[in-house]
Figure 1 (tube, rainbow, N blue to C red):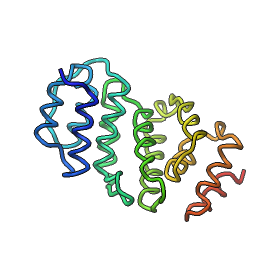
Figure 2: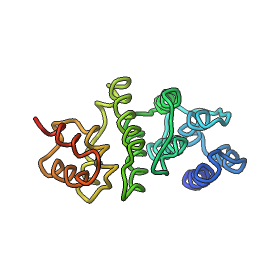
Figure 3: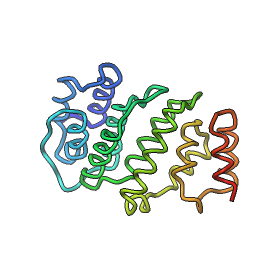
Length: 204
């Protein structure tokens, strides 16, 4: 039985290179255990690969890894990602269709991938971040309200990229924004075209 991390690495390699999953990735998915296979099944469907084999319970790490694969379909590893409303709808459906899937899985995967954008925050990337947060909040409010934000706060205190700070600006519930975090966001986005949004957000 193949390890989940090996499958995820192979699939990410395919998506970063060819923008599609190759035969070896599909075979690796077929060789996963039932729970891991279930965690990735909606992602495989989203990525255009036929899938079957479900379980009632899944592992959080597997679900986050599956979200990473789907986010790469939006070229999130590039400075200027590309997407459509239709694809975002399908993506969110796949996230929530995963057994035990949640908005938190999406946010963890997104935050981790945004670590790659250490220098720049383009307008397309900022728009994608904002759109994902808004759609998650409006369409899956119960799941959004259940997110445990403590890991994000710990990561932010240890340093974050402008893209990650922009995510926190829009995603974090206002009551969780400490003066220290607000200062980090303001400084981190000061040299970007988005500093005005920070001022407006923290004006109250």
